[in-house]
Image 1 (cartoon, rainbow, N blue to C red):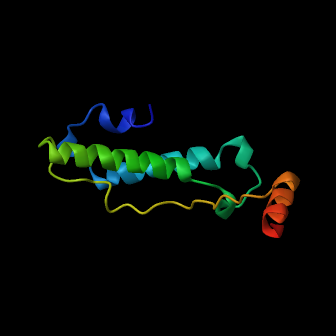
Image 2: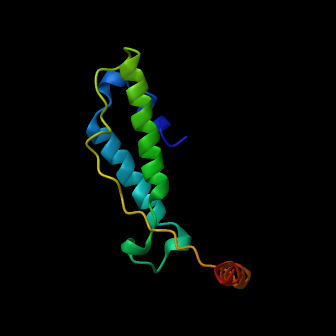
Length: 104
């Protein structure tokens, strides 16, 4: 559903890096304008979903190249957006298990 505006009226050979950058910019604005992100700095917002979408497009173009449907991958020169590192915290139960294991 996200890729359709890019792909629906174009031949594979006509899809450019600029098309992909425009797609990435539009998706970035969608996430920035999401109510759950209001009041956050851009550095506090995770753009992982856009990076996954970009990776999917890149794999699609690589498949097309391997099978002779396309000549190049317009996604390769586009940088990833900011991804927040996921912090795993231990529960009290996990901490007790860890201490018991260390004591043994």
